[in-house]
Every structure is written in structure tokens, then in C-alpha cells.
Image (cartoon, rainbow, N blue to C red; front, side):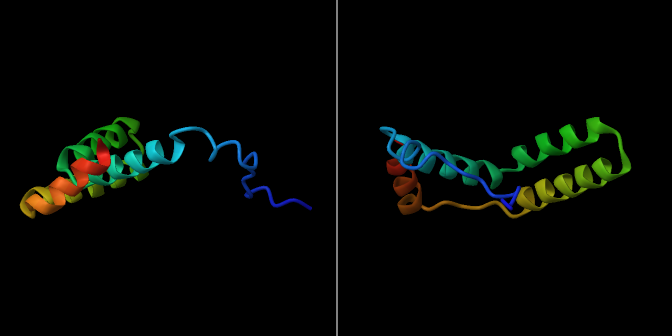
Length: 90
């Protein structure tokens, strides 16, 4: 019996699309940078708080705490890392 959690992709069709891997790589880097910023977690907190359930409220609190942590402990990208990221994202 086939595993319902298994994901099947059309062999070769997705990865052979022109620019797919470049686009995927850029998106992964964009997501990583976004998740390192307090604003991302503040927006997530607001979205969870809007749900209004105790579980979602707990998740919203965790997102707010993470945003506060990132605000108190900012990441300082030095010029070398910033230049490297810029080259990849272009």
C-alpha cells in the first residue's frame, strides 16, 4: 500500500524548468532573512492572535517573545556576508 504521506513529483519536469533552482535558492534565502527580523514574528503574532483560541493565543505569545528577543539581540551582518547575500539574491 502506498504511504499517504509520500509526495511524488513528476520526474525531471520540475527540476528541469529553466531557472527553477535559482528561484528556489533565492526564496530560501529570502525566507531565512525574513525570519531573522522582528517584524516577521510580530506579523505572525498578530495573525495567530486574530484566531482567538487558547492554542493560537499561546503561539501568538511565543511569536511576540521571539520578536522581542530579536529586537534585543539584533544580528549585525558584516559587509562580507551582506555582499555575498546580495550576489545570491540578484
